[in-house]
View (cartoon, rainbow, N blue to C red):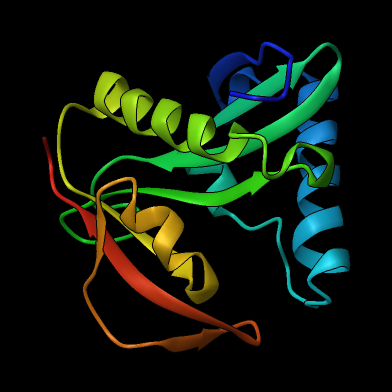
Length: 155
């Protein structure tokens, strides 16, 4: 990775997040998914309560985050990774790939090896393809943004 920083990764259930971790994660998600992408939607949904949250810290700054779901929570028969984001200042540094590789390993550790399904923003198809995800359906509109279903087979 070329950030010249070491990312410290942690994965916690919703109940185990500290107030500071929760606030920092939700603020970053709002900055990216609501403000930057100009998308008015309710980012804080009930699914956060069911998820494990992966947080990547550089010092006291949140650089990247995902939320991880066991099989049958978001998609029948599949584990899932969602709310994937890298803070703007850490994009194009390899942090996003590191985040996804770590998140895939965390799914395996927490839930066992199984196929992982995501709803990927269409413009990120190549990024997810390089991580072993394959498009499994047509483009659909979610919150005004083109998405595609993608699945990574258990390895």
